[in-house]
Length: 372
Image (cartoon, rainbow, N blue to C red; front, top):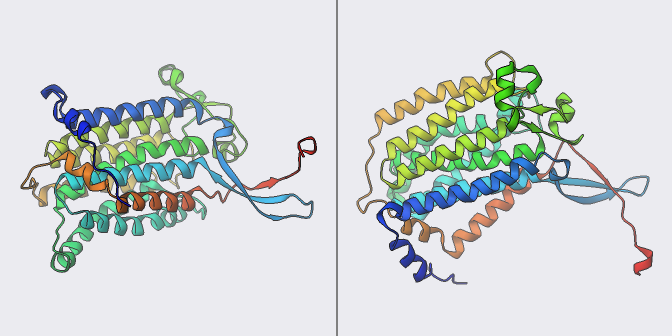
């Protein structure tokens, strides 16, 4: 199966954009506009009860002849969508920087193979729960190991496959992909009612007044905010929405820097925002984050900031010989193999994160007699 090339009319339109609206700016603003529409809908609709369970799959019958069901959630849908958005942007940016797709894919597969299991392992260690995930812990681990993985790929793959990953360029593209993925993925938290903020009633009056118009109210006994803290029906700090907006703005800014070949600012803005806001936002959250006034996740964020600073100091930023070409990056993922990879990745992430292990279902099936 062959995909058609990017239509010539699209390329001509992009190339004809005036200097004040070049291709890079058009791409970044279009992505920002699309996510703004998605967020506007998601912040209003996803706290409702009917936006938690996406599907119930009958498995076997109980003694009452009802089916026991497995729930698949909108949490998994939005997590998978966020992951694929982040991976797609990483691949586009790496392609724009003249990095071969094989090298970028190798990095993606290694990072996902390490960080996906760690998201559950670290949550178990910190929160003492087997059936939960932590994005923060996995991101910290990914930041720590990424330079070492890049070095290993360059040492081994450079000789075997004749490609090398530019250090800061790759780290900047990864940071942008992560922050955009996590920003979009916060819609998953809203739909499941997890990662929730403190009740407005517990905050000082001036904070209540400032956040009151933006407060979120969750409904449904199966939302985590309900069974963990009994806060369904109460206005709470919209910390998930705040994270989505702040991360997306930082990601778009970092993307603009990257496409302008300013890789150091791109890395600094995205990592600094992600880790700095993670530290601050923990003070606004009501869900259990481990013992102590400063949670283990906050300590990870504090450690990540100087670690990222050291990386900026050690590794130089070297623009690719041909410059950064967004059209080349978009063309690099417009292939059957890459599209199938992204679809398979979405499905795997959905099955891994979407199957609810803390909710169950009983399904009654019957025939509508007057329609037979």
